[in-house]
Image 1 (spheres, rainbow, N blue to C red):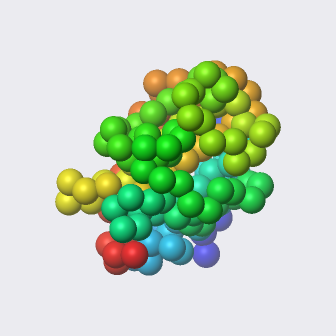
Image 2 (cartoon, one colour):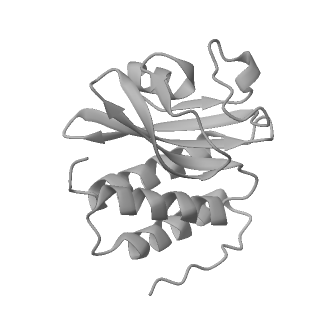
Length: 165
């Protein structure tokens, strides 16, 4: 059975290195994307300081994201591609880091407490099939180091989850 451990470091690089090791161990041998999304969001929510939401949205019919496994308050269920931070990340085909969501045009306030957000597309075979989304109640919570670390987390999730949803 997987036993996660608190990551005690002041270095973001070391934090994300340890997080990646724990995630690989957690997902080892499991190929189901829903199970892996549930465990990935739980691990992130448990280990990352100062976040109030961690989870997945999966692309359906090429134009709509549907909420998947997550940790945090209830979430928006459907997000159109191009809307909000999640839909914009899909439309642009790249990660989006927002220091203050109130300044982001078209932000969707699923949780009014959220102030900053980081969204990373999930890409397999050159195609986006969803996003990994993190929110924080603190403005400017996420930076380029967080983006790089969560992009690695997303790639670990994609590699482990070979069954298509």
